Length: 566
Image 1 (tube, helix red, strand yellow):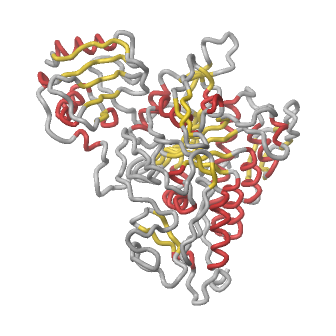
Image 2 (cartoon, rainbow, N blue to C red):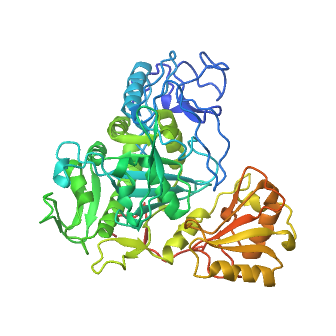
Image 3 (tube, rainbow, N blue to C red):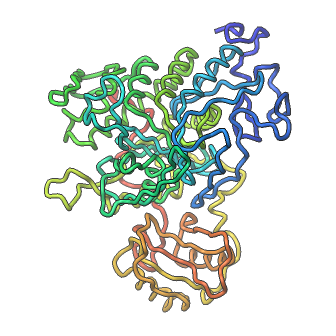
């Protein structure tokens, strides 16, 4: 496509006019002359004048601490809604959207305005309150939750199950962990039939009020973390945080229609089978031969939903097929679609029509910022895996699963410590990781440490064993056994006040605690107030360091691997 057809008669490619505004953290397309240096004031951009998609810069988030959201702007209503762009003169940006799937680079002022308005109007946002981050991409690791909603609205979708399901559930859920140095990423599937405890949560209502939603009173399926009892995606995010010990920054939610429209927009997704796949009982009519096939639309959705003809005809088998489909689509986008502006417009339009996100990434500009960073990751350094689980021992004929007591904590530990699952050389960073800095500084004497010890998921008797070890072997006499914690934790954690940091560093040294275990507060403690040490499933026994493994024995694949080898 020549420069004039893309909207610039002077031969300038608008793709070269994307610049990062350091004040907002968003990429912007400058259409009114040569690209000016980022941050240079221009018409309508002086002090106190907001720009489209702008947000106040937020400080880098320290892993383990939550960056709270700012109050919503006056023009934004609470609850589920669509956001419309502010019209502030001639400077607008045509941005990328569609989850983590691609980006659009198109110029031409009138053409750009049309697509900008269209894509912006497509995006649905949900106010999830204080859950998540209001920063698109803070320094350090970032965790995105991608939720596949099984709501049956849309032509033909009622054939896939419960027609009365009007809100949907968290049917397909992927946790996308992006490394702090952006060199690698891990995509972890969370089985919908995983039995877990769903925590209490709050849901913002359309009138601006907040509804308190009680958590589960007994282990229940993970997919009920969304849609049941009024639970919104923020509840699903909190559930994932409880399970993994990670902080989830943002969510993206798609429905059945997204699969059909996206797969069609990219010209079909290549899949490859080692044996024929026929749905004889599920009603989808899926019939694929051995070898390569290209699926799109209804057939693509049937491929992702199908479990008939698979090894055990289970949800875990289906997850494996879904991961291969996702990897194939990523390859398709990176190798073919990104070079075609017309295809990318189709992809962006298709994706945003079925996309719901949190306000932290609820604009085309913010999604472009996210996409720019994710696009730097080589496909060979994107690992796909399933959360380690095992059959539920409480069921005579298991139909649900529970966390693998050994492998799941290991995976969580690696993600919390930002350990890559691929053999990738870490990029050098100018500044040290913010969390690691918590271990830097003076140490108190062991005898000055005051700490209460709780058992939040460690071995039976772990709190007392740790107390004995601290008092008799490490001279930490001012320690107490507080028994079982009020609630279980995913990983061992040490909570302390700012004026107890020297005690925390010393205790971390004694117990071999990783930096991610340190959870500093914001208010100083009284002189005699103790810190709180909660032992989690990663705690083995007193005297054994608590640290993340460097690798774990779980089935993995890479995004650059094709379904059929050779």
